[in-house]
Amino acid sequence: MVLHMPWNRNLGGARVQLELAEEFQSLGHKVEKFDFNDAFPQYKPSPWAEFTRLNFSVKAKAFVQANAHRFDIIDAHQGNLPFTKKELGFKGLLVARSVGLYALYDEFSKQENPKRPPQKIKTRLGNLLRLWKYKRDNFLYSYSLRTCDLINLPNYDELTYVRDVMGLGEKCRVFPFGLSQQRQIAFAQAIQPAEVRLANKQVAFIGSWGPRKGSQDWAEIIKHVKAEVPEASFLFLGTGFDTQKVLDDLNLPNCDWVQVVPDYDSDNLPKLLSKATVGAFPSYIEGFGFAVLEKLACGLPTVAYDVPGPREMLKYLDQSLMTPPGDIQKFSKQLVRLLNLKIYDYSQVSQKCIQVASNFSWVEIAKSTLYTYCKFLETHK
Image (cartoon, rainbow, N blue to C red; front, top):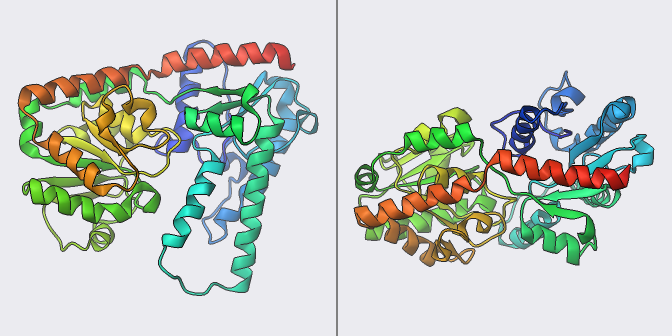
């Protein structure tokens, strides 16, 4: 497993390979990783951190060249190994993995930029570095997809893009993200009775606080929901920012009905969600969306924008829970509807949430992934 970030379960991008590795090992396979900390053991945070990706690729290349003979399969994040197998000295199966396709995130960024407020003029050096980074990333990501044997994608929207725009569909396969059996049990055990949850009237969001995740939409969402359900409260988990920053963005004073948890240990999430009533996820683009999957596993009916990632799960639950991106009124209306459900109806939809989440099992995804990897390995040695 190769990834340009720390091997840490609390990081969504790293968590995919980490938890898959655990399942592969439980099935009898040997798994090693080469991550950011392996490449830069003496690393110290700096303003130049975003420019280390190219150096990581060089470090990863050197590691593979020195150890290629020990591996049958290399599963690397897109952009991490933008080299041919000949350059790497590797004769096994080379996989490029997306946990959120760079090209689609880049398109979103271009659409988002015109909406951003004017910013202070940057230095010429800063602008040149950002342009260099943009061109570098485009090359790294695109070339790594073209030189690999197999592209592992988390949703079918990405498959459509890679097939129709990049012309690489024949080597693409879609594998969703999942939860371990232990994780699903932990969520199930944390669920409070329907009457407790409905009485609490709490809307839960999980995710970093930023425009891509819908931070600019929340002030209006809260306004609409509070107008219909005055007693509603809001829980923001994993924002990366403190309460004051979030309240400032929401144009709200200090209040007891907005709770912000900047960061948390992954094992504590079931308890944090236990008394919530509904989930909300106004994200504009995702690879898959652990935040949606885990709320469903905790029995929380969740409203999300109809975008790549969340629709892979919510299409099996209720189409009305997916609203057009940016349609705050429809999004809020669905939250209000769920908050006002009767106990029996809420219990029914909550059970269906758990059932849908149970279909995304890491052990089954791991088995399917290994089956596909072995088939491709036979033809790409």
